[in-house]
Image (cartoon, rainbow, N blue to C red; front, side, top):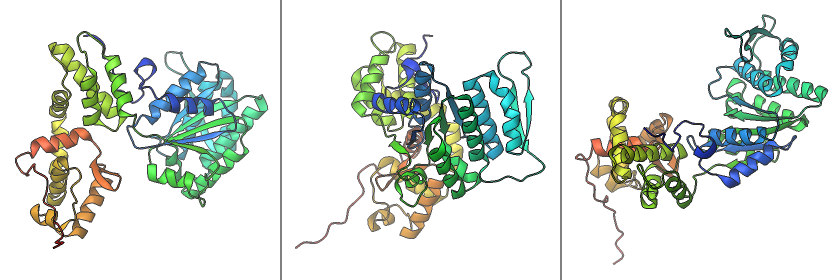
Length: 394
């Protein structure tokens, strides 16, 4: 089978990277400017990590030292420090191994360097809290200060990307936020790019005058790629021949799977795959239903764990995305209960990651789950628009 033109992994790179010319230029400039700071934020699956790594790859190609630290799965502050030191050592080179013990001792961390079994690559690092101390909120920012001091001593510069940086607050609260502010203010050897998906939290951090990062870092909210631009990119990636996706179908793909970049790429791949395997015209909806069938088991399991009110709300939103859920006619027609009960259910569905908020209206976070709900409950709900009570003006 011919390789898919659509890379479905979270870190699409090179030609598989959906072109974000303006945003990419901003990140490359930030990475190339020691002492500057840029905060990149936006909803999950919008392509932030891919953008961060693609900018880093291009800057590193110009012989800059670039370290990307993934904090998304770090379990605690020592684990985050370990990831930082590993990334910095990988960017700067083996000579930093002699410095690691000094940094760990300054931070009161126990450090173990483990050679790789095959003798290739950089040795692994294990960090643990020293018996002399307990975990402290500023551990990661202390490590940043130690790295910055070593960069100054060696007259080196470093482009540093912190992915899901807001997780630092989970190990120390707002104290870490202010410690990070101090790191940014005093560092002249590091070019900072910090990205995260906790949109509301990060937006408050950079736009609220009472927060630490206000007017300290440039910020860029990553939204959807424009529909026409993304559709043209999809069509260009699947030109004439088996798996061809015409521009009209590419628009269908973006409309059905949008606005998240990764969802769109997943549906683009499925559409290309069906057209390639069966030598048939590309159809976005058929490909979407094929994807839904493949993932029906976890969707069904998750559905069974929801309350009846939550199921009714999702069933209604799957068919009528803009329905006024708390309107009296809607509540009575679909047995949704009191407006307060609907609010509780919506809060629960957001916490579970099933619904997201878009311009004040709840929306499915996963377009493929929305389609599963629509298909699985199609006989349970009237597809016609819900009634609207009209005021008597006579």
